[in-house]
Structures are given as structure tokens and as C-alpha cells.
Amino acid sequence: MRNSENVFHLAIPCKDLVEAETFYTLKLGCQLARKYEDRITLNFFGDQLVVHFAPSEIDENPKIYPRHFGITFNKKSDFEQVYENAKANEIHFFETLKTRFEGKQEEHLTFFLIDPSNNILEFKYYHDPRMMY
Image (cartoon, rainbow, N blue to C red; front, side, top):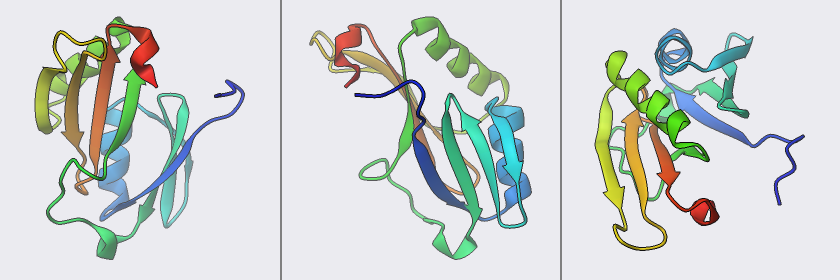
């Protein structure tokens, strides 16, 4: 079980730290926590995202599966806010808003964004909060 005192940590590569910082802070709305020559650390919706300068590790042809990351929102309003923010800031959608598993208990809304270094981000909202895990 998740302890709310702890945070999940994820590290991803980028090709340009300034570009990554602009994307995650100004466009997506994350808070910059720390900045070094080779990485930035962000508050990514309550969890820790570390973006490392690693241009040789960029996936030039990314696919959603098997590698993406993101947030599953408990509140629909939070999900909608991120979606509207992404549209307003003209963030590139890898896949637009859609409903998955329609009519089933695990039905949820989802959309995928792609950052400037081809990392794919998924944002979800389940109508039944028991399906979040």
C-alpha cells in the first residue's frame, strides 16, 4: 500500500535540459525542485521525476507499449484540468482523449502526451475509483 509520506521516483532521459524544463514546468505545470548540469528534479503531480541529460538514450521511434508513464487521477476535475492545460499550451498529443474499456467496470478516460525527448506520458481517470490499481 502507498504511504502518503512517500513518493514514487522515476528517472527518464532527455536530449536538452532547457527544453525539458520548459516542457515540464511552463507547459505541463510541474514544479522544479532541483537543477544540476546533468539533470533536473521535478514535482510531477506529487511524485518525483528526474530528467537526466542523456541524448544517446532517446527513443527515436517511441511506442506506448511497453514504455510510458503518467498519472491516474482520483478526481475527474484534476484530469480535466491537465487535459485543458495541455490543449491550451499546445502540447503534442501522442493519442487524443478517448474512453477505454467502455461499458466495463474498468472504463476510464485517457490521453497520451509526448515530451520533446519522445517520452510518452499517460493521464487517466477511472469512473470507478476502485479500478485505479
